[in-house]
Image (cartoon, rainbow, N blue to C red; front, top):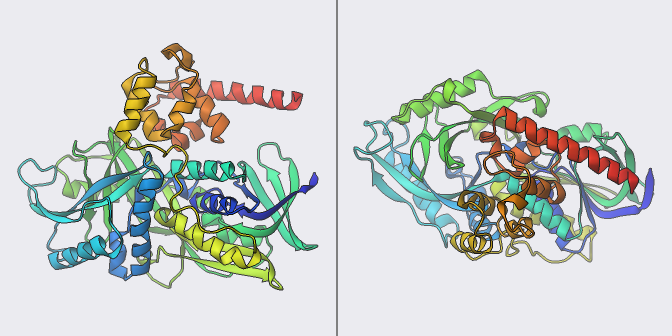
Length: 506
């Protein structure tokens, strides 16, 4: 079908963190925005990260001072914008004299403390590990510094919600199959990947924020050659039952000069990663290898008293990062910085393509992207996202939010309210608005997953499948049994079936 009224200023391809960040920023400047994602939001790289908002301490070794400065500054911004899903965390760096010398670590941490504006986080310090240490006895010294942990996929979701609140159209399960300049506009052909239905929309500008597929989009959608070379680097992680009861994360060094994070995760687990393995082919087919699992197990066992094996791995994942090819031979040395390419037709109808980038700097990337597009939109508004609180983040402190939730819903279990607060922030009040007793939450799928939450993420957060619910809207996939997942799948299938019938009837 063709709808001439479906005309936009900016059309974004890709529902990862960069795509939704640009969509939200552009919509908030008064532009008409539409975004398409061929799968679910955050279904690729943006849900398969190390779940950190950090400056990138190791990037200092490669003299990436601009990137580290920007990331350190954004760390403070995001702690304020989304305090429910971005929270401070202390990191411990065990000292191994045969790897990096102490003076190098001290110098790096000094720069890390002072390069960016640090207002809420504590600075670094030297520490000693005693008899009660979770580390092997040979390690007696180390350092400690601050960064932040985040729920990466939820950061994508709430940015998409912010974009929608500003008027953007967010289309999931929608593939862009062709885009061409014609008659003074971009003509864009879309396909609903569930129904096969095709439609045309029109735009003045297109943004290629397809992440690992950024090069593929050029050939498949624009019938053109990609202007930049990228390298696809796979970063894999494993999740095991928690290695210790300490609140701190650990950053450990390996003899190959790489570092690996061991991070407290979802209360009862430890998240271990990442690797850097260059890949070819379809990013969607990338999987963690046996060698990567062994690598992560080995380095963890080198450092920690508690030893783990393959049998301890409860979940694993890998994300493919589209990095700029800066001619480095070693994948870990490839820059994590980003760049843009703008191509026009006689100075009009721009195509802005994004190469590189990282979770922490998505907001600045979006701001820079809008700066690059400003010459084509005289009416574009000013920068606005730095101080704008993301959906659910409008509360004074997590303690105050939990207290308010408990007062409003004293009948609800504390564990449930705590998880809802960390996941949805003040949107928890919206979800629970009509609930007066535990029975009002509806069907129970697990210890604390109820129908009311499933309905909320399907109605308000674009969730359509079990994986959308238990991995990208929540992390309950770590806890649900197979029978519980089947129960949830049956409910979602029935609900989707009813939704289709209702849509057709209306």
